[in-house]
Length: 132
Image (cartoon, rainbow, N blue to C red; front, top):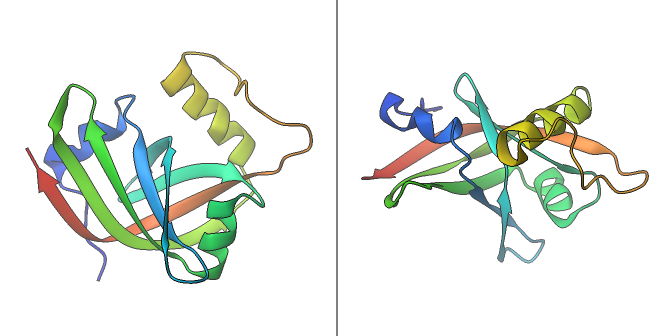
């Protein structure tokens, strides 16, 4: 069953707060990466480049967890567990530019590498834990 993100914690997605995303390696061990994120309704949206480790992990096993800590109060955080319910390249270039504006204050994502293909992942939370 999908769970809504509590209203009291939605502000974390408007701040320049990094989420730490955990995916599963092929042997079942966790892999964690800090990522930029935003919110679309009750789905968390992240962005990466096709072929990176988290991309390969998510395509193999859509179960993920993420923790997003309030940059103004490190004792306040939201932890979500859920599944990636959509993977798309459509709109991913515009989305990474939107995130670059939020996190870096620039109009274009400055770390684009050569011929990388950007990908958006939509995460549907299934469990939420809050602190603070």
